[in-house]
Image (cartoon, rainbow, N blue to C red; front, top):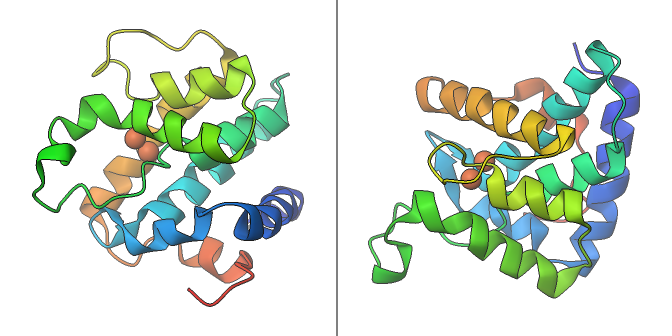
Length: 165
Ligand SMILES: [Fe+2]
Ligand SMILES: [Fe+2]
C-alpha cells in the first residue's frame, strides 16, 4: 500500500528537480538488476519517509527526502567498464555529493546522508537520524533489486515524472 501524503511530497520534489537538475537522467543508468538509479533513489526516499511515519520518528523530513533522492546522483552506469568507475562502491558517494552541490545547496544532514550511505563499506558511520535511516533503507532496497525483477510497480504507478524519459 502506498501512502498518499508521502507520494505527494515526492512528486512535488521531482517536479522541481525535473527542470532544475539532471535528476531524471538517472533513469538511463542501471543500479541493480533491472532497476535504474532513478527508481532506486525514489524508492529509498519513499521507504525512508515510510519508516519515519511508521515509527513516529522526529526528524527533518525535507532533508531526509532530498538526501535520499540525491544519495546516488553519480550519473554514470557503474556496470560499464571504465577506469573512472573503478572502486565504484567506495567512491560514488563523493561523486554524488559533488554532482549534487553543482545543482543545489546542501545542509549538513543532507551531506551526511550522501557521504555515509555506503557504511560500513566506507569507513565513517552516519551521524544523524536521517542518514542512519537512509543507510539502512538503501541496503534493504538494494537487496530487493538484486533478487527481484519488475521492482516498485506501485511506486512507478503513483509517481509522476513530468517529462518523457
Ligand atoms: Fe550508493
Ligand atoms: Fe543507493
